[in-house]
Image (cartoon, helix red, strand yellow):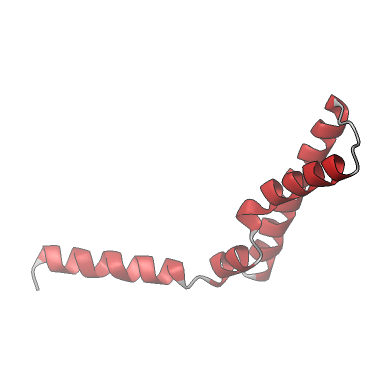
Amino acid sequence: MPVSVFCVFLGILIMSCENFSAREKCKRDNTCESRAQMCFESFSVVRAVNQTPTNEDDAVNMAVTCSALKTLCEKDCNLRYLY
């Protein structure tokens, strides 16, 4: 088998394994990547609906909280699927 064919086959195999990773599937299924953005958008919508003014401290606290949600989601998947 020529080396180039072997390299292509190996690349496809590696990509397939990554696509079926239980850890990555967990993160995708739980929308870990977009969790912080969705959290912050929800916060903004609730503030707008309630016509509540947002000060800088509220915005910073919510950004930290939403980022923590994303991190916790990823850590949960990493702990569930250690391999």
